[in-house]
Each structure stands twice: as C-alpha cells, then as structure tokens.
Amino acid sequence: MHYVFKPDKSLPANLGRVARSQVAAAIAELAELPEEDSVHQVRKRCKKLRALLRLVRHEAEKLYRYENAQFRTIANTLSASRDAVSLRDALLKLAPGKYPQIEALLSQQAEHKNDSRALDDARLQLQQAAQRFEAWPLKALHWKHARRGYAKSYRRARKSMQQAFAEESAENFHEFRKRVKDHWYHSRLMGKKHKKHIGKRRKPLKKLAKALGDWRDLHLLCRHLAPLSAQFPGELIPLLDTACGKSDELHGKIAQLSADLFGPKKLEC
Image (cartoon, rainbow, N blue to C red):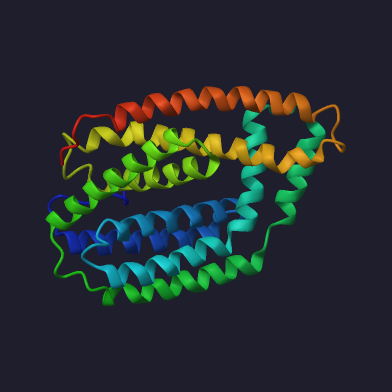
C-alpha cells in the first residue's frame, strides 16, 4: 500500500515518499493505460496528492497553496473527458442495455471528449511536480501536526454533513462528498499509525464516499438528459423514474453511514 504512512518513519519522510509514489504512478499510468482509464487514474492521484497536502496545511500554508493549485490544474485539464465518461458509466450502472438510444448518445459523447493533447499536458506538469519534491519545506513537521490536520478534516466533514442535511441541494451534497473523500484519504494515511481509532474508519468512509459519488452522478445524469425529452420520448421518462428511485435508496444509505461516522460521539486520534 503506497498511500499510507509508515509508523516507524518521520512525518516528513512519509509525506515525501507518498507524494513521489503518487506522481510516479500517475506518469506510469499515462504511458501504460488506455486513455479513458489513465484520465480516471491521474485525476484520482491528483485528489490524493491534494488531500496529502491538506493534512499539513496549517503548518505549510504556502506549500499547500502552490501545490494544491498545481495538482488541481492537472485534474481540471482532464475534467471534460472524465465528466462525459461518468455520465455514461452512471447509466450503465443503473440500467445496462435497457435504454439503448440514450446509452449510444452518452457513449458517443464520452468518446468525443477524449483529448490526447490534454494527456500530454498533464504528463509534462506531473514531471515538473516530481522535480519540486526535494525542495518541499517539510523538516519542521511532526506527527502532532498530522493529528491536528486529521481532526480538522473530521470537523470539516461533519460540518458539511450538517449543512447538507439541513439544506438539501446538489451543491451541498457535492461539498459534503469532497470533505468525506478528504477525511477518507486522511484515514488511509493515518490508519496504521492509529489503528484503534482511525484504522476502523477507512472502510465505512469509502462506502460513504462511493454512495455520495453515485448519488451525484445520477443527479448530473438526470440534469444532462432532462432537456432531451423530445429526442428520447420512449426512454427518458422511465429512465428518470428509475434514477429517482435509486437516488432515494442512496440517500437513505448516505444518511445511515453519515450518522455512524459523524454522530455525537467524539472522535479520538
């Protein structure tokens, strides 16, 4: 497991090792994987790198601001193709083969969004990032700083949860999803160092992040297709009904997992 801190190493050593491994993996995936898969993997690596930096943001604000912007730019470079693929995959997960006309349209859109130039640009930016790691100012960091960052990510996720359920909207649940993914990534990083209180949170946080992602993909799918009712008169209404039912199911799952993970009991780390 590359995305985890080794308890017997210092925090600076762990931060550098994880950052290098994520960028090296992203560069290799760009070279070895099909375009669609490499886009997905590189965007995921960038999110993990941003979460890594966010864990120590309070003590390394200048580093965080610069590198966070760099990795966000790389991910955004590839966002158009990934968004189209997410819509197609949301339909395939919901009802594979049941709505062939809509499936054909989404598949065509996903293929059309592929951009080899964006991949070349991402590769160059990742190579440049790898050259900056040795200059990262990490020597003053200690484990107490990571614990502080972990507690903060928990509070941010909990606050986002409360906001999402108090004022339910796609925007609020998307923000909650981002905070949950950060907290999940931080739990993966810190899980071996604090097995009793943090390690056990990893699996339920992964489930919650996935449920929130599936819910958002369905919302975006419905919003994308709603204006096309005249183009798909026999398929769209049944599809939207099916999506609505699945969204309700996911909402219940999200509510239960959220209560278990961010309930009134105080988090220890």
